[in-house]
Structure formats: structure tokens, C-alpha cells
Image 1 (tube, protein in one colour):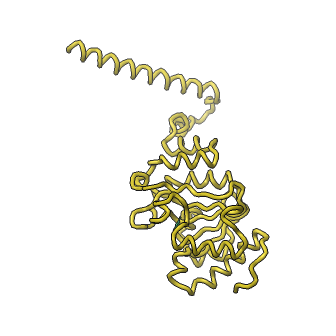
Image 2: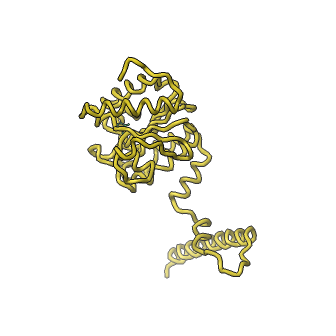
Image 3: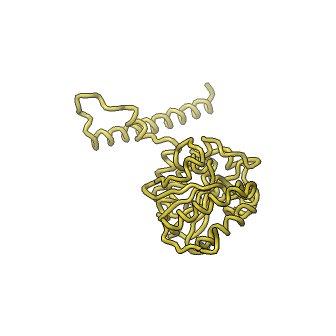
Length: 254
Ligand code: URA
């Protein structure tokens, strides 16, 4: 073994000993804090998961202390899933920090990817007319975001692993904004947020709950632009939403 091989090996052994020492200390600390003297042996796998949290748990843990601005910053550098490497801009979401309504779409499209802002394309402009029909304005009382914060290629639906990697951001945004209601746009967004595979028509007529906040589901504005028959059911959904939020309605519409 050459001198430099010996040096390298010593460094590796030193590193391994340090890591083992630190791990042993953490285990000792855990044993001191918890009574492990029960008759049944403890769940060592669960203890190991607590001591060595996975990437997702670490992320959730660090989000627990983050503000809306900090979450947005974290999202702009996030590469927890492959979409993070394909984006032009991440789209964390935007709106009033104390919004009474939170809107959740599926994921950014081309215009959103180009600007970093949610619902700014054709569907977004159309969606603005829904908001104004119930007296909501982007500036004052709505926070708009998506299930995934980076654009899926060719606007395909987000894959489950992409949605699950991104959901902790949305959950923290909901916990911080604490809206009085959440409006979910489209089946894909609703399926991921509500953890169901139900069809859209089946989800529409129920008031769901996430963290005890009422959640309504309606059609995605892009779907309504393609099929005007959906306008009437959307208006029914918006009226239901306005009632939950105690908003006076634009009586001119029907
Ligand atoms: N469609 C979505 O679901 N979200 C956007 O931000 C834009 C279009």
C-alpha cells in the first residue's frame, strides 16, 4: 500500500468511526428519553425511521417552520421529482396570505411555466370571471395554487410520485393560509387532494374536508372552455361556494 493509499484508508476509517459514534450517541439519547423496558420489544424499525428520517420526512419537518415566502423559495429550487429539472419557472402559488378562499388546480401549463404565476393563461383568464362572479379578487381574498408546482411535459397529468413529492408544500400552504374554503379545479386535483379515485361528478355535490376545512370540487376551467354544457353545473358549484363563504351573489347570472 502506498503512503497516499494509507492516508485515504485512514480518512475512510476515521469517517466511519465518527459516523458510528454519532449514531450511537443518537441511539443512547433516544434510549435515555424513552422507556424501552416494556415486556414487548419495541418497534425497532419505527425507532430507526424516527432517528434517520427519509428525504420526504426531512422535507416535511423543515416545512413545519416555514412561512409562505420561505415555501415559495424552497419550491423554486426543489428537485424532489423529475419535473423540477424540466421547468422554466416553478409556480409556488400566489395571493392573499389570509385569503378566505384557496383554489387548487392541477399543475402549471405553458403560460404559468413561462411566468412563474398560477392560472395566467386562457383558462386562468376565464377562471378570473368565475371569481369575480362571486365577488372574489386575486388581490384581496384568494390564494391560488396547484397540486404540482412545476409543469408536467405536454401538460400531461402529474404522476402519483410527482404529486406525492409536492403535496407537503400544498399542505403547509393550507395550514398557513387557513382558508374558510378550498375550491378544487378538476378531477386530477381533487383526486390527489382528497386521496380518492372518485369521478368528478361524484365529488361535486359533496362538501369534503381537508384539515377540517370545507372543500368543494368543480370542473377545470379548461374543460368548461371546451364544453359549454359544463357552465351551468359550475355556476351551481360557485353558488354553493359563495354560500359557504357568506358572499353575496351576482344575481345577474344564472
Ligand atoms: N391549469 C392548472 O391546473 N393550473 C394552472 O396554474 C394553470 C392551468
